[in-house]
Length: 89
Image (tube, rainbow, N blue to C red; front, side, top):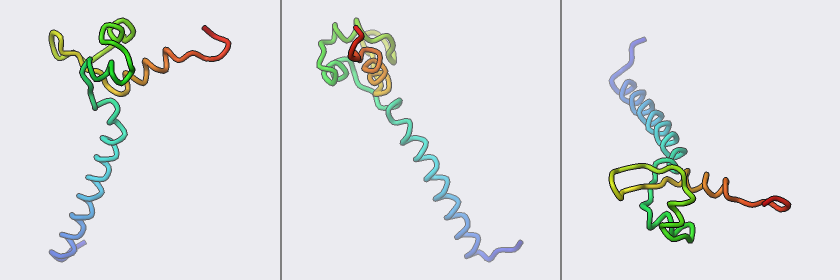
């Protein structure tokens, strides 16, 4: 199949847009795993002190001494594990 320069340009633009849309959809759906909070902000979001947070959270992203980060997904998992349901303690 032979395309004119104009047709080839249009096909490339459409392919590039489709690829960009697919990449963005992938990143957007993973945002809660990518966005990170430091200990103070994560504790604040949960209305905990940083020492309370360190006692209840089991995993974090480690960027070195005193530089822990927590993803939204990790905070959601913590909330899910700690959520009480009626009739259970």
